[in-house]
Length: 318
Image 1 (cartoon, one colour):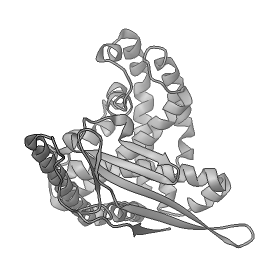
Image 2: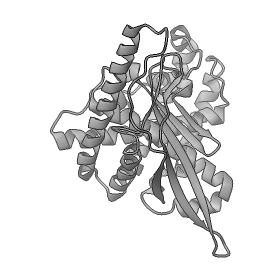
Image 3: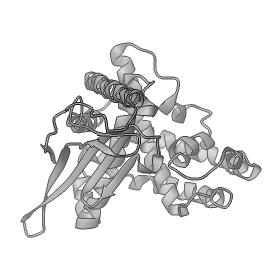
Image 4: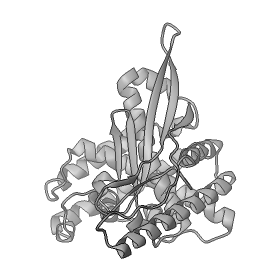
């Protein structure tokens, strides 16, 4: 598996559009520059922190993800304005895998992706358009990230990159079948991305979310939502591990917010759903989240969500 880049786009200059007020445009330009700098600094921190990771598999997986992000930072990322218009196209990066068929012939598989800094009001539904044809598209929202730190920025970027990797694996399996995908993922670090061992956790979560969907208007089927929770939690825990490594490398305290919430002893399932599922554009109100029926279900989910977090951490540390 290797990466190659295509169509490198020059950074260029932010272009003000005719009739657009200068002040909002300049504010947007400042956000673009600041968030790009935050991600770039965070990317450098992540690279420096890689030796702090516990296992060789963790180190190799992070090196692969940071090499992907190198295609877009400090230059190479696209820009999307407040109206959702592409101001600058992202360059394309391509992950290529040569697949050996049963007759010994090689079949190329490519997954291409772009990354944009987006200045429109965050819409979680399009945060990662994770698979359209052979493309994945990642959007990092500048208004969300502008007031954060480099550690926050790289954690967000790696989180979205993790989802892109899972989207690529699903596409690979659809094309070549489960057996070939299993061979690809049988070696480290790719074996870390195999979530089949969490099927018992998914089944337990599905029982809870089946009840939850009766009281919350989430447009997903129980099995789909449960599987989404497993993937979200994986990306979440990977972010925790990365943040711990950066803290160790820079001798800074571990973050007290964000991903660390998932591994806290009293982690509430309601917060997990709010931050990592419900914010993805579902029309769920705070009143609905705090309804008696929902609260009772969240209470029953607590031990299973905690068990999932512990199992994912053990999996990633193995």
